[in-house]
Length: 446
Image (tube, rainbow, N blue to C red; front, side, top):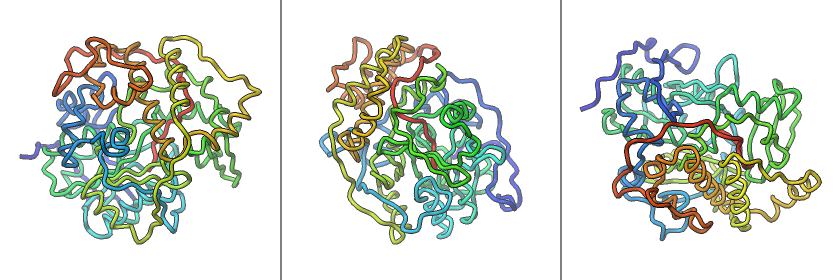
């Protein structure tokens, strides 16, 4: 029996005349360690305790629910990336103007609407006054998916749109979301009364508020208002495009990470255990793409999604090169100091150009780069929880994450291992976070 959702009156046909519909939303309920996925703004707000990724996640159970099986460490790369059927290096043969890469995620939304497979797509568009600010929108016309192209940075309550979608009578939905949104969605999926749900996931390599992101842009370029495109690439460079056509490529080592404020990255993003969006039907990202996108088909609905656009795509096997262990060990040492509030060991300035030149040539690349990032995130999760919210370790850290950090000398202390079938209650309060120790960027892209 579907939950009785709050009544929201949509425009005629559930769609505004000028593009995607951004309905008014309720205020968020106060929550600790919250990225405002939108669930607390709905009649299902009380479900946050069992749906939130940052409380007591049970990835094994949800992976079985969504994919029919949990990740199998004996299968290549499933320990790192979660259950999947097929994996590709992918690009649209006709890239879409304004897309972050070639526009795969947006094109999937278009095709679902064009074919009538769904009534509506829940996604993010940009605020009219700020190109970087995400606004949750409900899209019912394929041509309006174009407004969802490009990177947005900030927290946005995507799942709050489930109520206006239900009120408009939409029973077949697609959702394009990041991991914390998708986790909560899967936890309540059975209560929504939907006839069909497709989930297109994007990996999330940390997030921050839109206001904080503007501070990053201010440090990055003397003319931040002219920046129209920003992408953190798997070749260890950030690509920036300006309104006048200028393009800059900045090595990761030259980024002003050390000059960011202490609260730039919230504790939620420092302790996220699902970079690769394992509960999506299909994941579209960059980390394993080596110049293209990284496409991971996870289940039968993911196969359906790929079939919608496969004739429009160039697909190839993912590449992998280099060794990740040295990079992860260095990240662990730096993160241990940051998590403990100690000053970071910064590379001498005269070495940065040389190392920046070497990293794309001898560092981990392709799938090895993606494995490195997943392991770095696992390391960061353990270290920051130990220092900032140790009582959460037992409930937040799933068993597979301990397997990822074990090769680097990290093991669960007494009381940190999860109980079979779930975590513990009595989570400690969130605390302020120190400056970030590592080159990885924030991102939220569609």
